[in-house]
Image 1 (cartoon, rainbow, N blue to C red):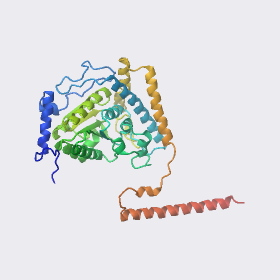
Image 2: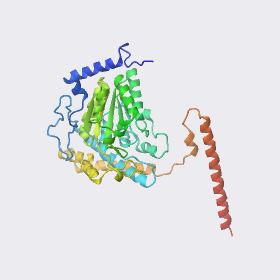
Image 3: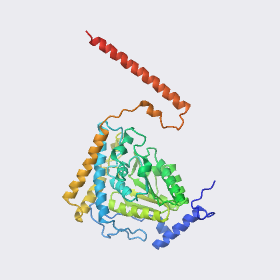
Length: 414
């Protein structure tokens, strides 16, 4: 059966409708199709690593790649979330070391991407995060403790996706892109004013699901922004061993959608680029891809030893590009941030950290049989067999403990 991307124009091939929309976008900017689809020759950067605004002010000397500076209120709000995000990353890493969480994929160093992703969306929009995007999930409004229960195994996801319009953080690589495209397709068919932000990392671009998601979104001209956080490593595999494309943003061109590159440690540029991408998707320009060049400052997870595959000098180079320090310097220089406001944000961040410590500090009794619930609507024979085997094993374990306890009691009795 052939799906129709636009029920209002029956019989028109989806690819032709998408091509018409690209032509409309090209006319809007007064540029060629190539200039519209291709990313800027240099990544978009508004504030340099020293916290100074680029000389051009509004970034972009190339036609179609001009971006206005975000408003002061949005910039201050972004910095506030950066402070909270950094504290959350540090606190969660500490909780793992204390044994209160099983694992935590830190986004330390990538907080600018996390914050901009959350702030660029309207309340009715959807976000589909990866396992590393906990800070983005919290910045979107999800309760911090509910967000982190995923990494303890307390609940199946920890929060209600429909309530927050935030998909569950997917551990299997790239599956969330297909979910995002499905939601965008449904929203378009229903005529809803919804944009979907689909987040992934550079490693995900090597997966087949990445191709399927982008191709479907392009052919059916869906309101999706694919946000690729290129942190240079797929666990231990460097980008050069994953792709030889000029950039990951260039991959978008093959699907007929525009791509853009942005400094992923510059939250000002990220806000500008993502804001426009969401706006274009909402206006009917179809899907877009944004690649953010950033860096994972810590190991892949607590189970990883990053010193085995990257040099200390490389880490030091990226430390000098820290998004939090950069934004603090920029806002202070503009008179938008002072010691009082800095202290207020730090106190708010510490409050969230306290909430995490208290909420995740207690062991949660878990019924072992929870392992078999909610796997299938109707449990399979194999699942029932496994549950019975576990029940027998637990009974034997308890009997052994009771026997040992009785023996210890008898020995202690005079």
